[in-house]
Length: 342
Image (cartoon, rainbow, N blue to C red; front, side, top):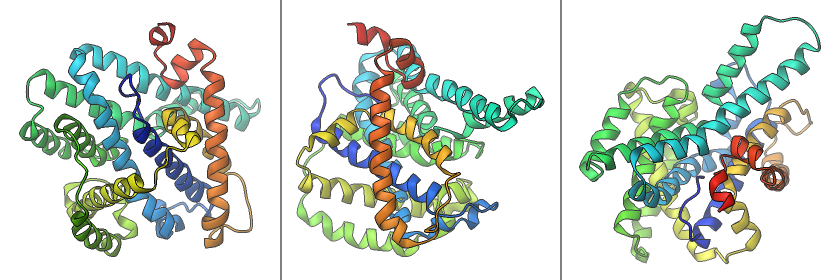
């Protein structure tokens, strides 16, 4: 979801556009399609076939695109400049949105009643560690890959060694999601370095059985959000990675065939970071909405995609409005103020 090269690639923007729609569609199912259960693993959306299909590949592919688009910056900028720029772009919005959202919710919930400051501080800390997790993962992936480049170790051997080391990290807060998505960033980075050739049609002979196998092997506890990334969970980790690679490759190949460069989708993809940030907090508010179709597959197929389209449009429009104000755009959407002036 991060900005890439100066000359934009319309196919990549189109691909990002459909992917960010899938992100929002998945959130529409998750946050409004089912009743929330206290036990995270008992929520019904884990078994929703549309939700499952989306979550098997959408974030891995988004991370691979981030790695693909980061090659220029990592090769052009020094390590320190990469860290500073990506911190401003990705991490500043994480902290600012956490403070604004949790402070606003705190005021609405208390309505003048006195509560300990520690409660608000704890909620903000929780939001920083859990909300907008993709930005954390993209930032860490960029920093580690830039460090490999800095020390001349960004070949396949160095990348594999770094990934192996990352797998040994504890599953603390956002780290599990980072461990899950980091190798896809590396894959995208290396594909950009070596160049991407149009795959031959025979690739489908391998992809189709792999994709079918992934659907057969996937279970509710395969989601990283349910079972984490501890090495004792090796079976689920393997299924996740196989699914991420197979379904991402199949989706990109299919999208190459059907993409017609539809302008609204290209525009949506070019501002996917705005949409991702804003829609996250839209859905945190929509969890309070009740309706009679919760748990009904009709809602998943007919209502949720319409809601997702509406939230995409609203988030895109909100991002455009915020970007009219340089300071707000810098702290809320990670816009480079110097680049905007140039």
